[in-house]
Picture 1 (cartoon, rainbow, N blue to C red):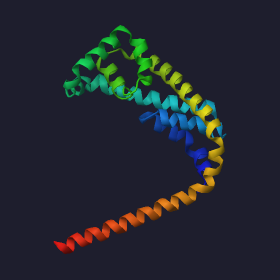
Picture 2 (picture 1 turned 180 degrees about the vertical axis):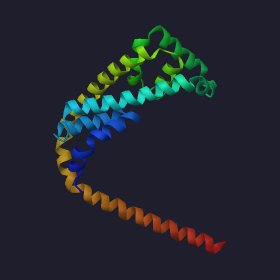
Picture 3 (picture 1 turned 45 degrees about the vertical axis):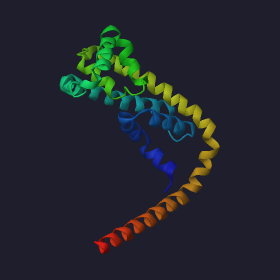
Picture 4 (picture 1 turned 30 degrees about the vertical axis):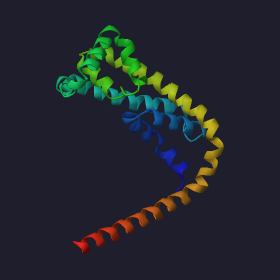
Length: 189
């Protein structure tokens, strides 16, 4: 099992899928992989921007379609929701682009924007611009971080197989212990 080979073959697809859901960690790792020469920097930026844009676009559409019913379930947070919706109406450009950079707003932000009925013709270009800015920034941070951890990464490949075996052995011991305890509890009953 060569981790570098896996990254080279499936890295871009993993970046698109990973950035749809989470984002920052995947993007930073993509930057590290670009620094190591496993992936191309520009394609990492495009991949994570695409995934982030698709994820936010889907959440926006869900917010447009089901936003009222979803927000009704969050009635205990109504003050915060109202404040966010006021910001969306006053500063839609900043809010759409900035949502990616606000901790805790990665999922709820596009839902709120969709529920606020911001027109798609405004959201889509802002979503693309925000995704590109975000992807470039975090990929660059990962690339720079790759310089710091580069010496450690070169020795990782030789140790990864040992760590995998260690995890397997620990898991087997834990499962055996669990099985014996469960069997002992059944015998008592």
